[in-house]
Amino acid sequence: MSDTERPEADAAARPEADAAAKPSFELGTGPGRVLVWFYGVFTVAAASRSIVEVVRGFDRAPLAYSLSAVAAVVYGFITYSLVRGGERARRAALVCCAAELLGVLLVGAWTLAEPSAFPDSTVWSDFGMGYLFIPVILPVTGMIWLRRAKRA
Image (cartoon, rainbow, N blue to C red; front, side, top):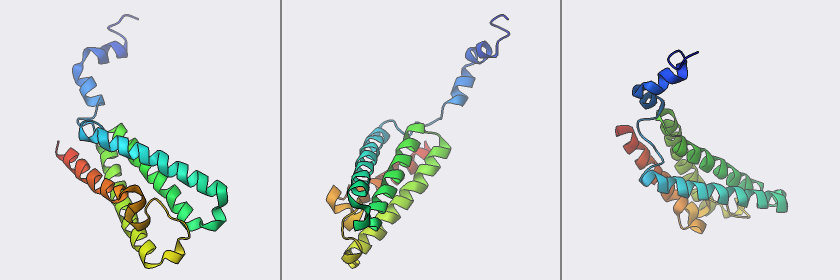
């Protein structure tokens, strides 16, 4: 089979095929790269924290430890979506950022209103005060970036 008969050669000869394969806007570039870094760090931090908490004594504070694990999953999914790029990933990340913000606000208010429900803190306790309030700032910043990405 010659080069002209192979589909790979045909696709390589057409620059529009490459343009169609790549998303028009890379979510993880420019300021998005900083978001990827923060979300990546928070994924590792929340996952590590929840693993240690579960191993050391899940029965001591199961709600708090479960919420830390949920935070790790949310952070990981947003990191993946930002790196992946594309419109579907942008929309999925936007929904996750909104859910993350809602979680931070609900858990933050709950930990202040009823501290006895949380014998140990979570990533989102007190609106992320243990993490310099980054858990409440990060989803807002992410949503702003993702909305800007839609217009690009």
